[in-house]
Image (cartoon, rainbow, N blue to C red; front, side, top):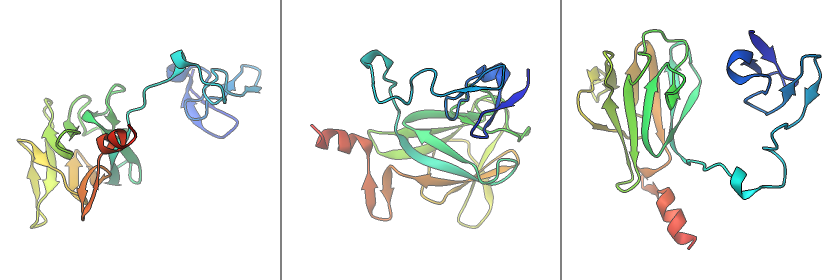
Length: 181
């Protein structure tokens, strides 16, 4: 069992995902044929018990340096644990200097409409680039602003917010829910 490729060209782990592509939901059969949408995730008919609760994105981290250079990571409301493990909300693959679990935590607080960076409970340190262009270790909660640079292990990221106050633009998912009522 190794990597297999779906008809759309996506490579994925058969051990982790079986024979269903996690990107486009195509089944790769043993005989090399393909079956479209075997679990009905993309059909026009939606059954109420099949609805998945989507946690809307509140911002992104984009990797600027390191093995995942160019990759973006979604930040959702509340706690986003960062590490290399499969169960981390922000999983940084390829950088073995990043701790397996809880290297750092990014928290979006919907009540205060702000995003914070917290040190994790692992041995690894997380750094923020300060105004004098020096990396400063984060030992207590640090409020993130648009364009802040974060460093974990050998990887460097830039913070791109959606929610919060950004250059006069204010957005919060909570406001859109209240407007829809």
